[in-house]
Length: 386
Figure (cartoon, rainbow, N blue to C red):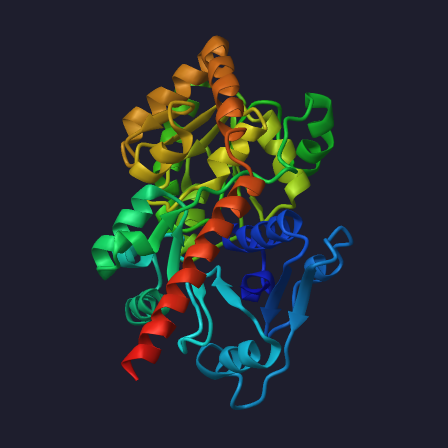
């Protein structure tokens, strides 16, 4: 079978969706050597993607040229490409699929944050999501979500039958493993990070609730009067200026570090050496950073929201997202209790090992089979109606 995968998430700085796209395609190719998995994009791939030498022989990276007509990618360009090159199934990994039903399609809806929390996104992106996402959900043959909670949200908001939506969990990538402290020293020294620090990883944007983390860190700093640092790692998103201004005015300003976007190697070093990983997000579809932190042996504090609870289970300390007092207490409790941190390290490592990208690929293959069967049944029915 020839499977097409949306390559657009691999043309810009890799975040969760980009990693999801590549890991899924890679493991689909490994799982089924007789299939051809083709990552297709009308734009150039990142150099780091093009230069990877470990790709399976049946995984292709294709940049297709467009003209003034076919650059309307989802409505004209991609449907033409699918017909011309015999793509038998297309997977839109970033909220979009071809609007014309030229083959079975699977759509991944990672979350509904733009609909459920529009105040945390740019207005123009919210407007686009409100008009575009319902069209894509109806056009797709099958829909994949990362958690059961998002599956239910998609069902409720778009009135899509539950049998057309399947929850498929994601996983920490294999590069995330616990390192010895000595292996983290160079990274921490280069970034100006001392031995004891709290860590957050993710795009720096309002939905991540970093103002609450900042306030909690200030309270922790007053209580401990020590050299504890707060490290915020991730690319700058919308309204980052507000957070930066607050951090500069903070009484703990000299202890707060914004690293910007980091490589996987640097992230692994920080996950492995942080005192506590803190993820206070208001809303997530899945939340990969807590799972990555667990895979590296970090004790995790995360938001008590349905998707995070589904992902981490009982392997993390959960707190009400915007409750500064509760978050402060949780951080202090973990900092003073090595036994509690060790308990969470063990539980987190075990939890992270329960899922893998091989499992994600296997479960996704089942969705493909359902999509093909559903598409063929519909085509037969159309033939009978004619």
